[in-house]
Length: 93
Image (tube, rainbow, N blue to C red; front, side, top):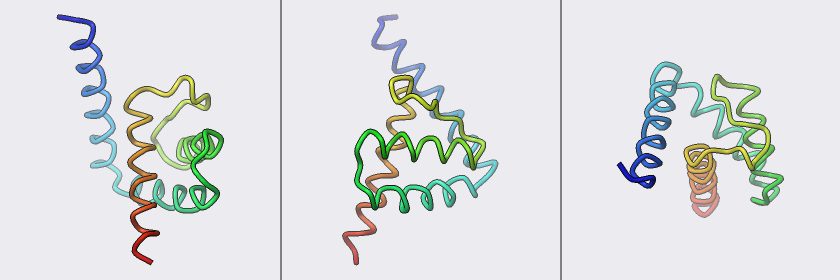
């Protein structure tokens, strides 16, 4: 198995664990979106992304490391998707 395949497998496993948490506690999505709506109103700088990650970690059972340098691919993907959803919502208004 190549390093790329190992990386993809690790990301898929992490995403599966995350999706499992979402299915067990659907409030995570609602809380995460609330945090994202509030914070992304201030832009999407690395500092804003870090605040979003920290507040999600503080208010839900999802753990995203405090230091953005320690975010996994799955962490970055989740934060990017939250940002996209919030931007799409804002574009509708």
